[in-house]
Image (cartoon, rainbow, N blue to C red; front, side):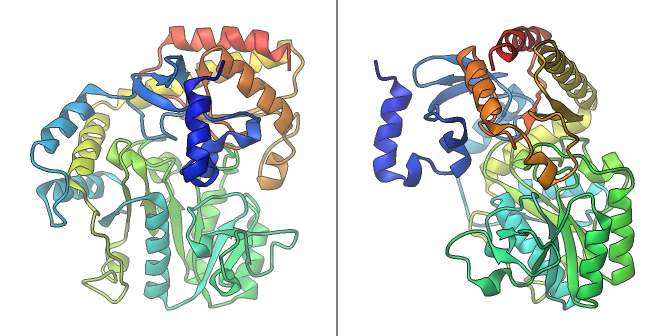
Length: 427
């Protein structure tokens, strides 16, 4: 009998490319149709057929307090009474900007946008405008949204100029994007030497959370900071995933390394469509209307999104114990999953930092994109589908993170671990 999700997917494919509005939702890498979600509450999501799942995706990170967190829900409902959008400044924009600039290292000014992609695109433009340089160094496997200049594949030659990684991206748009190897400082230094005096910025996810969860080696981020200073380039941290999750001050606070610019995504909107970029005052003052770096957005600083984000960020600031609890919960879960794999003699490399984790189905160390790709994606797909059947909703890709939230209970984690013990023996 056809499920409602299957029926909805059939309809969607006729009117939406691939039946989804973002490729990662397509579930193609795990060999099945996507679930269509009807509602969510706390740590659970419910599909169109009424099935309940323990959610370890959390809308890809922002639901750090859980779905429909009362403090966020109340703020949104109150904001709705005033209207949906004005296209004009509101006090909430000032409040959230003041909160962030007062408590996040190095962020002296901030500009609201509508997505992480837009934030990165704007930060890169500001870096080029401020330095007067054109080249950007990024890292293979770090995802920075789908703007033309960031859709670049390194290929086998990490020292060459960018090759577009998508149809529709002219070669010229990617030519100024240079790709290095994550955790490999030599590859960065060679690019600086090859393009001496023309590198505007180095951009990276301080924790590479779009090729699984790949952690920076000891000293990697600080040495990047030093290299940028030596070469007159800016350092941009893409904190769409790590911002306000590793710590209130994000990866900058967690690792004690300060970037020149930082980008944020949906977590600062409590899950609503929001992004932002900010950093040193002298750089941000190059942005229009103060300076000549143009960037605009009719819906930027949307009053309802600002209300949601302000409520969530205030709660996190006032309740720092959240970070300790979700880190402990994440460590408990991954330890249990790792033991389940060991009992079943399934090769597994596990990474965890704060409330982020990833199970790589490989027995080899994972330090960069190349080693992450050694994972057995077919085994992951079998694991994913078996766990989904048992009511556990993980990201439908080997190369995405597990997100723990404040709403997850020990009972949820124990149930997940117990089911994983049986599943590992079958894959």
